[in-house]
Image 1 (cartoon, rainbow, N blue to C red):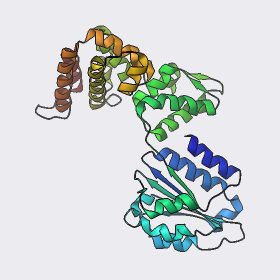
Image 2: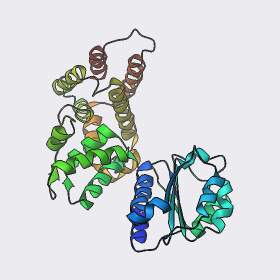
Image 3: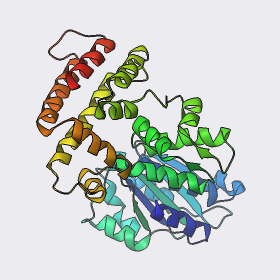
Image 4: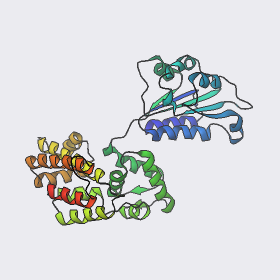
Length: 333
């Protein structure tokens, strides 16, 4: 995040490089940087003749080089953006010769999503010397709530911790999808607002009371009544609460609980580090460990894997989601 901001800041300050190679598993920052370049490097009147968007599946490296060597028309520079550059992964190293001596009046941007550029090869080393190379790494789930908080803070908003966790539980680690939902909230809420679970329920449609986050917590506390209410809600709204997602999240929770039992140090810092979870969840593991001894946790994990197969129709006749959820709860608690 900081490196992406620095790249954008440099461009704003006129420190524009002739070559930007943006790669990695997380597309959000690749799209953000390339979009900023597309919108801001050239004036509007310069774009029609001097800005070009190419797609990796439609061009060769030779095509890219040929276009990059052109001179701009009535402008200081031209911008060429290659989207879906990962489609050129078999031939991308052919860009090395151009990268050694890039056209100074061209800004060439390669968007190379979901793949890595081999750091041992010449292309990586040359681009690092002549331009900007940026790796957009996937964010671990336990870091997403903090990303949400910082992202909103930069926009003049704050968010409660529970609301950030709720978004993460529902949307996962897809930053582009999270950003889209946050933009909806920013559109309807005034600046300086604190976003709450109630706001998320009202404007995004994620129930603040009936979700996997609350189900996991209720099961950990052995609150059968609350867990039953949640699974009944899931059964009535199967499209919004797919069984496969529920069983996957619960399996992950109980595997982490198994690891928690095996720790000699149960301090918040140790648990956060060992389990790779947000500090917010440490108390949940402490309570669940008291309610589920290690031997029982092993049995629960086995049951959850069995239920996962049933949910996928393996080794059993197709069952309604309501029946699967009820059996799941019985097997756990």
